[in-house]
Image (cartoon, rainbow, N blue to C red; front, top):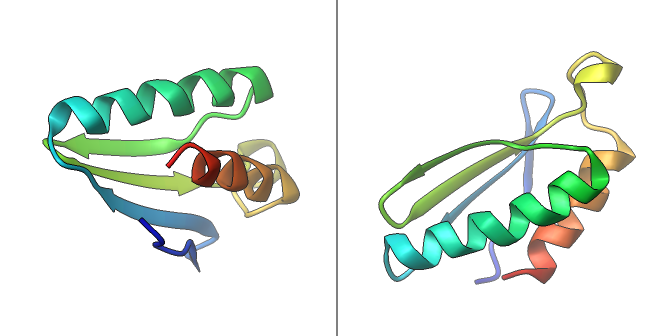
Length: 79
């Protein structure tokens, strides 16, 4: 799953599709654990096998920062 992050509307964005809901939810659980460690949480949605993720830093005025790029790399490592 080599889908690149897009930077748009002051957010990093990625859309992922998995085999089924269970795989999508398991991925989200892994991401949640990493996000909690960083105290940096994504805006995301999940419908069946599709997960859409948006990252921006609220404390910096809802723009993309290095914190978002670090979380994006951690997310990619979980794929």
